[in-house]
Image (cartoon, rainbow, N blue to C red):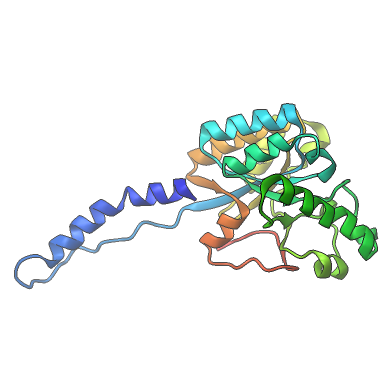
Length: 239
């Protein structure tokens, strides 16, 4: 949200100047109407199935160049051997989430197996990053009442899914996301394909040109004053 606040802050000196003028000198009627700046259009760009060193690192480089924060839902078995990449994500302001340890359907599991997939990944991320505030995205978006009960954190789905895994066509993915995106959207992509990285950075550029700002999932919901609660499911933050 730092870039959001910076853009808003740039407007306040002018606003304060006009407000000060209205309060100076003898009482008089002020005909001018001072309009506050409109809320920006916000979207959350999210990535599943990583980290994968080659593609994820290139994506992080591109996001850093653009001043964009994203949310990464990680596979625990891949975190084990790429903790430096995960630490970089966290250090650069991206949000981290859980996508199970082995990318399995959570609805097929008993409580012990669920814990082995979700709680084990949570513990690994806590050990790697030193905090414990991770969201959950169930693989394939599959969930039931048991998943909600056992999650122990908010469950994040999505509202825009270009199925970037299907044909690895970067141009098609860009068009699908840009045409479907709206204020409050959560975009689903995967940082394990080179074409998806290409598409993601082009999506950022095109949506920036349309006045969109990118933020993490937590920042998106905080900006809309929408609390995220454990065991509840969220797919967008539409105003």
